[in-house]
Amino acid sequence: MAEPAAPQATAATLLRRPQLWLVPTVLTGLLALLLSLLYMGGIVNPNRDLRDLPIALVNDDSGKPPPGQKENLGTQVTAALAADSGGGKAEWRRLTRAQAQDQLDSGKVYGALIVPAGFTDDVTALTTQGATRAPTITVLTNPGKGSLGSSLASQITTKAAHQSSQAIGRQLSAAVGAQASPTAKLLLADPVNVVTQVGHPIGVHSGLGLTAFYYTLLLVLAGFMGGNVISNGVDTALGYADNEIGPWHTRRPTVPISRTQTLLLKMVMTAGITLLSASLVLVACVGILGMDASHLPLLWIYSYCAALAVGLGVQAINAAFGGIGQLVSMFVFIVLGLPSSGATVPLQAVPGFYRFLSHFEPMRQLSDGVRAILYFDARGDAGLTRSWIMIAVGTVLALLFGFAMTMYYDRKGHKRLTPQPA
Image (cartoon, rainbow, N blue to C red):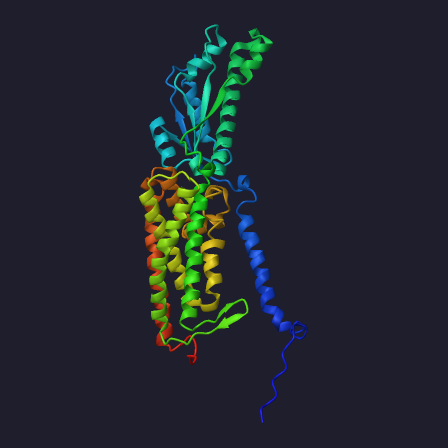
């Protein structure tokens, strides 16, 4: 006689079980709290956290010192600025004009302040009848470092230039004394024009310096999502996971295979499929949307290697942590990576915790390389060399970590599932 079927549970009955609520509630709350603190904590107040933003300081003034002074005005201005970092916000780098341009072109500085040749002569002429032009100080921006970073540098340099102008104005007013007319006194109060120019131009289809960040994000997402899709697809095909689409549910016969061989299969498939996804990212961004990009062969190879390193890392983490691997890899590659990438907010303008993360978080390493290729003529010293090294290091670590964990599990006899009959 057949046993009676057990009664089906109802949602109303299950909802009264506290243990059913506990884990989802705690995990969801923790995720919401951590995401809020991590993301907003890096961007809430960049000006407060700003420290040592590198800016070039150039003195091209070769004029003779004014009467009674030992140095020309260009030397006085740059010396005063170099001695005053504006509360630690700027790291002034005293460079020649050629050195400053080189650091702008390699992304090593966020901007520059240039005291031009003839500055002293133009200033001293203001107190005479021979003045022919207004003295100027030039502020150079570097949009390739991102719109926010370039804007912060521009604010610092423009403020410094106006402060220098006012200091010079006080000297001139004191020299002229009561003889100056009210109009002359007004002009001498702030006598220097501050001219802002682009120090290292980028293309108009560069998203104001943000395409490097979004392109990097696409590569990370391609590796992250592709790795998880491949992992789930392989587990389903081998019978280690159920396949459920809408109301249809299937379970394939379990294929006897070790954890190590399963990981090898997933990593080989990741290497092959990532070739397609990375290529499509490049085609979509450059070919269809018209993103400004040079060095296309290099960008394609870099895109593949970057996405592959992320994909292999995802496979290794999933193999080591099992069911929570996707959550762990999300934190490693995205949650902690975005605020510490330095791609939108300069690392000099985020709290110290994010600067610490930036030394090893993958997104920062990858964004430096993309930025170098897109904006800085693929120069190695613009971050590309370090990025290649970190991609290699990340790939090796993923392989070592993943296979070390699966081989350990296999030796201990930790089988994934009891084989299911066909």
